[in-house]
Length: 432
Image 1 (tube, rainbow, N blue to C red):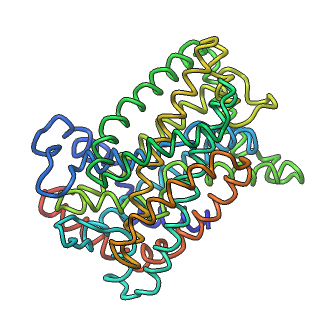
Image 2: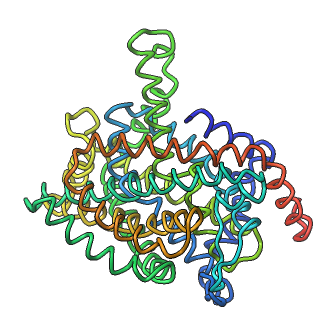
Image 3: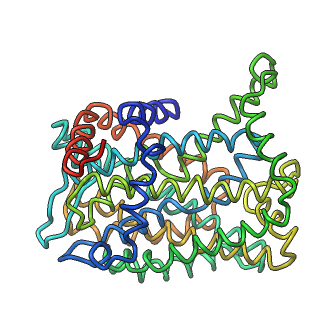
């Protein structure tokens, strides 16, 4: 599955001449460059702005994977796993780019005028495979309970238990109430909250991480060398146990990278399709920006904080390893810093993934069952808060894989539609 996700991203990268790298100036100008433009950020009708869509998608993507997932990858796969995270991100940019183009191209409008799209719609309308669209929707609902819900709630409850000795069940109850207030307001309220939380939490974490890295700036060359060397360690290729170590680095690097940016899963195009943007390629560029911020920026900062503070060889794992990295420079404040980041990241993911599940429920049944889904989703926040960490991550990875299968099939067979939309946009805007 991980190999297929990478190959799909590689295919779009080659066919679109590595647009994510060589046309970075274009997609940066069309995304973050429009943030302060009222024309591009203001709501139009019942849709949400492209920035709100990207913020909500980022809220779903920036979660435990950016802090706990990176730490776990380094612990299990070594520094080399960070390199494979980057690989997953570079190709993932074009995968999400393609997903968003198809999401906007094949979207429909609900009875109340809301834009609705995502893999279920481009699978049905583009491939004419209704059964496969239903399969994706079912798997998306399962994934919403795993990665979007329980994994995030578990991270928050574990952090509060470790820092303040608060019972996970109490943390879960408070989370369920707060999330419920936002979720019950639908995509409008979710988008508004995400628009305010995501830029703040990202800048907050990036600033703290950059400070840690600057304080250990002399260790950056060594950290970067270890990342690349252990990703392509010749002894690992030809050795027995060392060979296993290399494959483990690839496995955990790519899996945690995918867990972080969600490329190939088909989740983010569900909310990107709700944007009022009518140009599929523009919304596709917001997908590239989403993966860039999520993995290339935030995950890299987490990795460098751990590696430059020389803590990757300790027995700590997950949140505890990240806390140790920040505490080594910030003292007791480091623990509060990581705790705050985990809470913000994970809570944002919980509320955004509820929307993915809602759209899937509506697709396979009707709108009247959304309230039932919301109630079950809120209850699962309590379950996730008290379950064992390993079980939660295993369930999340399994549900992610099941969700990706129908989406990747659609991306492969609809790849010509993506290229067609991209070329049409280039001709219209006189791009080479």
